[in-house]
Length: 239
Image (cartoon, rainbow, N blue to C red):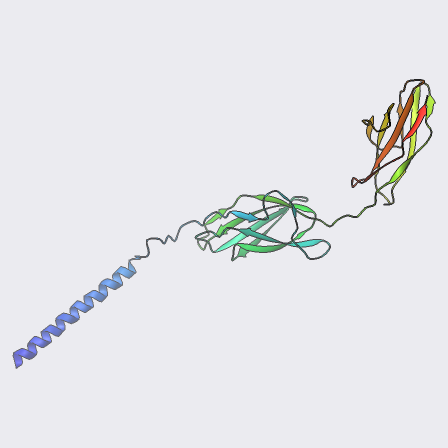
Protein backbone atom coordinates (compact mmCIF):
# COMPACT_ATOMS: atom_id res chain seq x y z
CA UNK A 1 0.00 0.00 0.00
CA UNK A 2 2.80 2.42 0.91
CA UNK A 3 4.58 1.70 -2.35
CA UNK A 4 1.37 2.52 -4.24
CA UNK A 5 1.07 5.89 -2.46
CA UNK A 6 4.72 6.72 -3.19
CA UNK A 7 4.16 5.90 -6.89
CA UNK A 8 1.13 8.16 -7.11
CA UNK A 9 2.99 11.03 -5.40
CA UNK A 10 5.94 10.66 -7.75
CA UNK A 11 3.64 10.68 -10.78
CA UNK A 12 1.92 13.87 -9.55
CA UNK A 13 5.22 15.71 -9.11
CA UNK A 14 6.38 14.66 -12.56
CA UNK A 15 3.21 15.97 -14.25
CA UNK A 16 3.43 19.21 -12.29
CA UNK A 17 7.00 19.76 -13.54
CA UNK A 18 5.99 19.10 -17.14
CA UNK A 19 3.05 21.52 -16.97
CA UNK A 20 5.24 24.12 -15.31
CA UNK A 21 7.83 23.81 -18.07
CA UNK A 22 5.20 24.14 -20.79
CA UNK A 23 3.87 27.34 -19.24
CA UNK A 24 7.36 28.86 -18.97
CA UNK A 25 8.04 28.14 -22.64
CA UNK A 26 4.85 29.92 -23.69
CA UNK A 27 5.76 32.95 -21.58
CA UNK A 28 9.27 33.15 -23.05
CA UNK A 29 7.91 32.93 -26.59
CA UNK A 30 5.48 35.75 -25.94
CA UNK A 31 8.16 37.90 -24.33
CA UNK A 32 10.51 37.38 -27.27
CA UNK A 33 8.19 39.46 -29.53
CA UNK A 34 7.05 36.75 -31.94
CA UNK A 35 4.07 38.24 -33.86
CA UNK A 36 2.30 37.97 -37.20
CA UNK A 37 4.65 37.77 -40.18
CA UNK A 38 2.64 40.61 -41.87
CA UNK A 39 3.15 43.18 -39.14
CA UNK A 40 5.87 45.80 -39.52
CA UNK A 41 5.85 48.47 -36.83
CA UNK A 42 8.25 50.70 -38.78
CA UNK A 43 6.55 50.48 -42.21
CA UNK A 44 5.87 53.77 -44.00
CA UNK A 45 2.26 54.50 -45.00
CA UNK A 46 1.24 54.24 -48.65
CA UNK A 47 1.11 57.29 -50.93
CA UNK A 48 -2.49 58.56 -51.42
CA UNK A 49 -3.94 58.72 -54.93
CA UNK A 50 -6.08 61.83 -55.45
CA UNK A 51 -9.61 61.28 -56.79
CA UNK A 52 -11.65 64.49 -56.73
CA UNK A 53 -11.87 67.34 -57.54
CA UNK A 54 -10.30 66.03 -60.73
CA UNK A 55 -7.03 67.47 -61.96
CA UNK A 56 -7.28 70.63 -64.08
CA UNK A 57 -11.06 70.81 -63.64
CA UNK A 58 -11.98 74.30 -64.81
CA UNK A 59 -15.43 74.55 -63.22
CA UNK A 60 -15.68 72.80 -59.84
CA UNK A 61 -19.08 73.72 -58.40
CA UNK A 62 -19.03 72.58 -54.76
CA UNK A 63 -22.00 73.28 -52.49
CA UNK A 64 -22.73 77.03 -52.32
CA UNK A 65 -22.84 78.32 -48.74
CA UNK A 66 -23.20 82.06 -49.34
CA UNK A 67 -22.36 84.70 -51.95
CA UNK A 68 -18.63 84.25 -51.42
CA UNK A 69 -17.97 80.63 -50.45
CA UNK A 70 -18.69 77.02 -51.40
CA UNK A 71 -18.09 73.75 -49.54
CA UNK A 72 -15.85 71.48 -51.63
CA UNK A 73 -15.58 67.72 -51.02
CA UNK A 74 -12.11 66.19 -51.43
CA UNK A 75 -11.59 62.45 -52.00
CA UNK A 76 -8.49 60.25 -52.26
CA UNK A 77 -7.53 56.58 -51.90
CA UNK A 78 -7.24 55.00 -48.45
CA UNK A 79 -3.65 53.84 -47.81
CA UNK A 80 -2.16 51.03 -45.68
CA UNK A 81 -0.18 51.65 -42.48
CA UNK A 82 -1.97 55.00 -42.10
CA UNK A 83 -3.50 56.58 -39.01
CA UNK A 84 -4.42 60.08 -40.26
CA UNK A 85 -4.15 62.33 -43.31
CA UNK A 86 -3.19 65.99 -43.81
CA UNK A 87 -4.72 67.90 -46.73
CA UNK A 88 -2.82 70.97 -47.96
CA UNK A 89 -4.53 73.46 -50.29
CA UNK A 90 -3.31 76.69 -51.91
CA UNK A 91 -5.37 79.57 -53.29
CA UNK A 92 -3.40 80.25 -56.48
CA UNK A 93 -4.91 83.72 -56.84
CA UNK A 94 -3.14 85.06 -53.74
CA UNK A 95 -0.68 82.20 -53.03
CA UNK A 96 -2.20 81.48 -49.59
CA UNK A 97 -1.57 77.94 -48.31
CA UNK A 98 -3.44 76.14 -45.50
CA UNK A 99 -3.39 72.57 -44.14
CA UNK A 100 -6.21 70.58 -42.55
CA UNK A 101 -4.63 68.01 -40.21
CA UNK A 102 -5.72 64.87 -38.37
CA UNK A 103 -8.25 63.68 -40.96
CA UNK A 104 -9.39 60.16 -40.00
CA UNK A 105 -10.85 59.07 -43.35
CA UNK A 106 -10.05 59.44 -47.04
CA UNK A 107 -12.54 62.25 -47.58
CA UNK A 108 -13.14 65.69 -46.12
CA UNK A 109 -14.94 68.97 -46.85
CA UNK A 110 -13.34 72.42 -46.91
CA UNK A 111 -14.92 75.86 -47.23
CA UNK A 112 -13.31 77.79 -50.11
CA UNK A 113 -13.79 81.16 -51.77
CA UNK A 114 -15.60 81.09 -55.09
CA UNK A 115 -14.00 82.22 -58.33
CA UNK A 116 -10.44 81.15 -57.46
CA UNK A 117 -8.00 78.51 -58.74
CA UNK A 118 -6.69 76.02 -56.17
CA UNK A 119 -3.95 73.38 -55.85
CA UNK A 120 -4.18 70.49 -53.36
CA UNK A 121 -2.33 67.43 -52.11
CA UNK A 122 -2.67 64.83 -49.34
CA UNK A 123 -0.11 63.37 -46.93
CA UNK A 124 -0.61 60.03 -45.12
CA UNK A 125 0.81 59.73 -41.59
CA UNK A 126 1.16 56.84 -39.10
CA UNK A 127 1.80 56.67 -35.35
CA UNK A 128 5.55 56.34 -35.89
CA UNK A 129 5.57 59.74 -37.64
CA UNK A 130 6.32 58.04 -40.95
CA UNK A 131 4.59 59.76 -43.87
CA UNK A 132 4.03 59.66 -47.63
CA UNK A 133 2.65 62.23 -50.07
CA UNK A 134 0.35 62.28 -53.08
CA UNK A 135 0.91 64.31 -56.20
CA UNK A 136 -0.55 67.81 -56.56
CA UNK A 137 -3.75 68.52 -58.48
CA UNK A 138 -5.37 71.82 -59.52
CA UNK A 139 -8.93 72.99 -60.11
CA UNK A 140 -10.95 76.21 -60.49
CA UNK A 141 -13.87 76.83 -58.13
CA UNK A 142 -16.80 78.33 -60.02
CA UNK A 143 -17.71 81.89 -59.13
CA UNK A 144 -21.08 83.63 -59.17
CA UNK A 145 -22.50 84.50 -62.59
CA UNK A 146 -21.94 88.14 -63.53
CA UNK A 147 -25.00 89.64 -65.16
CA UNK A 148 -24.10 92.47 -67.53
CA UNK A 149 -25.99 94.23 -70.28
CA UNK A 150 -24.94 94.32 -73.92
CA UNK A 151 -23.36 97.68 -74.93
CA UNK A 152 -25.46 99.94 -77.09
CA UNK A 153 -24.78 99.99 -80.81
CA UNK A 154 -22.33 102.72 -81.82
CA UNK A 155 -23.71 105.76 -83.60
CA UNK A 156 -21.63 106.64 -86.69
CA UNK A 157 -20.86 110.25 -87.55
CA UNK A 158 -20.10 111.69 -90.96
CA UNK A 159 -16.43 111.20 -91.96
CA UNK A 160 -14.17 114.22 -92.23
CA UNK A 161 -11.18 114.65 -94.53
CA UNK A 162 -8.05 116.71 -93.96
CA UNK A 163 -4.59 116.63 -95.53
CA UNK A 164 -5.18 113.41 -97.42
CA UNK A 165 -6.41 111.60 -94.31
CA UNK A 166 -9.99 110.62 -93.50
CA UNK A 167 -11.18 110.55 -89.88
CA UNK A 168 -14.01 108.19 -88.95
CA UNK A 169 -15.81 109.11 -85.73
CA UNK A 170 -18.55 107.46 -83.68
CA UNK A 171 -20.08 107.42 -80.19
CA UNK A 172 -20.35 104.40 -77.92
CA UNK A 173 -22.12 103.75 -74.61
CA UNK A 174 -23.01 100.97 -72.21
CA UNK A 175 -25.94 100.63 -69.74
CA UNK A 176 -23.48 99.20 -67.16
CA UNK A 177 -21.79 102.21 -65.63
CA UNK A 178 -18.03 101.93 -65.59
CA UNK A 179 -17.71 99.23 -68.25
CA UNK A 180 -14.58 99.63 -70.38
CA UNK A 181 -15.44 99.55 -74.09
CA UNK A 182 -13.28 98.64 -77.08
CA UNK A 183 -14.11 99.01 -80.76
CA UNK A 184 -13.52 97.12 -83.98
CA UNK A 185 -13.57 99.07 -87.27
CA UNK A 186 -14.89 97.41 -90.44
CA UNK A 187 -14.18 99.39 -93.60
CA UNK A 188 -14.24 98.15 -97.20
CA UNK A 189 -15.60 98.83 -100.70
CA UNK A 190 -18.01 95.86 -100.63
CA UNK A 191 -20.53 95.87 -97.79
CA UNK A 192 -18.81 96.89 -94.54
CA UNK A 193 -18.78 93.28 -93.38
CA UNK A 194 -15.41 92.12 -94.65
CA UNK A 195 -12.36 91.60 -92.42
CA UNK A 196 -11.87 94.46 -89.92
CA UNK A 197 -9.12 97.00 -90.53
CA UNK A 198 -8.61 97.85 -86.83
CA UNK A 199 -9.35 96.00 -83.59
CA UNK A 200 -9.07 96.79 -79.89
CA UNK A 201 -9.57 100.52 -80.36
CA UNK A 202 -10.15 102.41 -77.12
CA UNK A 203 -10.94 105.81 -78.65
CA UNK A 204 -14.05 106.70 -80.65
CA UNK A 205 -12.22 107.80 -83.80
CA UNK A 206 -9.76 106.40 -86.30
CA UNK A 207 -7.68 108.10 -89.00
CA UNK A 208 -7.31 106.17 -92.27
CA UNK A 209 -5.90 106.73 -95.76
CA UNK A 210 -8.45 106.07 -98.52
CA UNK A 211 -8.71 106.28 -102.31
CA UNK A 212 -10.19 109.49 -103.67
CA UNK A 213 -13.44 109.05 -105.60
CA UNK A 214 -14.08 105.59 -104.12
CA UNK A 215 -17.20 104.54 -102.26
CA UNK A 216 -16.73 102.93 -98.85
CA UNK A 217 -18.91 100.99 -96.43
CA UNK A 218 -18.18 100.95 -92.72
CA UNK A 219 -19.48 99.86 -89.33
CA UNK A 220 -18.30 99.56 -85.71
CA UNK A 221 -18.44 96.61 -83.34
CA UNK A 222 -18.58 97.65 -79.66
CA UNK A 223 -17.35 95.17 -77.01
CA UNK A 224 -17.50 95.49 -73.22
CA UNK A 225 -15.14 94.01 -70.61
CA UNK A 226 -17.18 90.81 -70.26
CA UNK A 227 -17.08 90.23 -74.03
CA UNK A 228 -20.67 91.29 -74.74
CA UNK A 229 -20.83 93.08 -78.09
CA UNK A 230 -23.08 94.88 -80.55
CA UNK A 231 -22.77 96.14 -84.16
CA UNK A 232 -23.70 99.52 -85.53
CA UNK A 233 -25.64 100.02 -88.72
CA UNK A 234 -23.58 99.99 -91.93
CA UNK A 235 -23.00 103.46 -93.38
CA UNK A 236 -21.63 104.40 -96.78
CA UNK A 237 -19.76 107.45 -98.09
CA UNK A 238 -17.90 108.57 -101.20
CA UNK A 239 -14.70 110.64 -101.10
